Length: 445
Image (cartoon, rainbow, N blue to C red; front, side, top):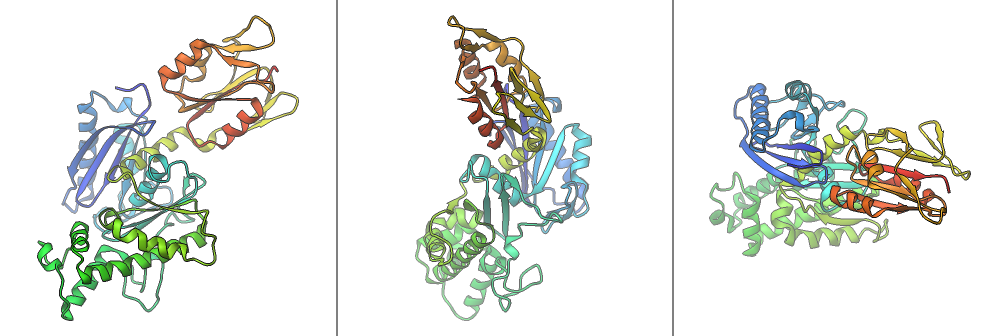
């Protein structure tokens, strides 16, 4: 099906579970959806997840051995090691050893995290904040979730519970939140808070079109219904949604003060449905901040929709599989040698995508003038054995290494991006990139 590593990403929701077969370039190759189990027995969730994974594999003529890993975004809090669900507001899964059970069942790497954390990671990989290393996500839906990516990695805090942005206190005298505190962002900017304020206003005698638009009355007012009311210019809905937008705008200001991110991504059902009305208000509050300069941090709307958590879950297990933090740091010396993992190398050396360091004895041919060399497809097959997303090629200090035509054909066929740079710049680029990577260094000239 694909010559690239394959992952399954799963969005575990309270009403439905969505799964996708994802390759290492972030393309969703196949999807599968299933209703979430209504039983209070957490073992039924394991059974449902197992069935979904089996079905997705069977439909695509695959087995678990064809996977590099399975990633999950789950509602609630996980322990610091991301193995067990500690608390889940909408599912009876507290205490479930989710990761070890699935790992034992499928015998592949499994990784899990909070669903909003995972959604923000997905946006960083393939969405609105693609390429950014420092990102904050604020996702108002039924509740209000958050996620933080710093230096390309999810930030989970000392006890694994960081990024609960929805429970940032804006007003200690404000309305009671589900967490027990008062005036949390979630208590003034989530859908349940909007429903509460609409019910209170109607009880006071306010008129609203929502009575006609909402089939479920005022108990549950879906985001799409709010969008219809805004489009019809319903005064009460617009008044409440303006106040919600202002609160989210102030939360964005605070997020910038706390973390100074490159991007703040706004997503979730409310933003998806009502973003055209809300974003101008949020931006106005954000740019009115007098402390920070107006440039240097941008607001963006989530662009992945339902795929955010699927892709983020795949990215989560992909990073765990690749062990990105284990890539050796390369130090280039003026003498033309490099230090990799405490060892000094000269001549020609490469580091594969699995971080293995090897000498290249064959695969370089001297061109006619004898002063430069070419690397051919035979050498690149060795170097790209573990399927990197990008190959960095250091051509020597004077740029004497060239790619043979067969090498260029090979890289194009394998869909491997590549950078050809003088060795000092190649080393700098390799050390800085977060992609799945390999490098060839020519150190003889």
